[in-house]
Image (cartoon, rainbow, N blue to C red; front, side, top):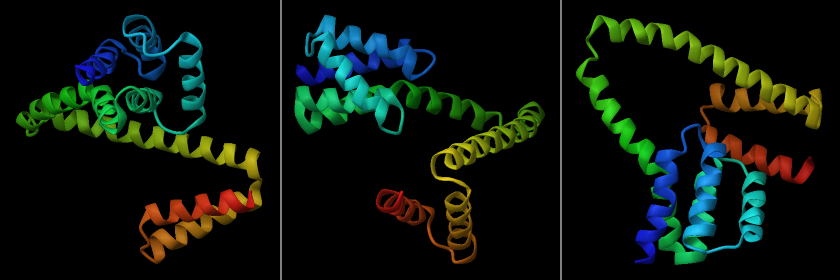
Length: 175
């Protein structure tokens, strides 16, 4: 029964929390603190603070931690799955619709309009990362990491995951 409760505690905020993590945090708190009483408000605020200090979306981190506290490894797995399940179901349904109409001139035109927008968004994201890196570690370190990463990925064919891991280790020891 506890696993079903964990699933519902994170699935319902996943459905109702339109707007991402910040919109779902109060819904998760309602389920975890008020409905099931797995935590106090203080404990939840501490988990939220820890979760906000880590990279990645907040809702799956909360679901993983709280699910683990309540139901162990299986509880954590169920909590994380319940958090992403609404988006996953919607993506599957919309993907099938898109696949059905992929040859439609309207869908092809839509794809042509979306690609430049995505490129601009990625460019802005990259620029913001570079600015944050400059403020955090300076231009010399930033340029060095960018150039070495480019060389390893594009010229040597090293998988990006390995480059990211090496950059994390470098940052951990030297920055």
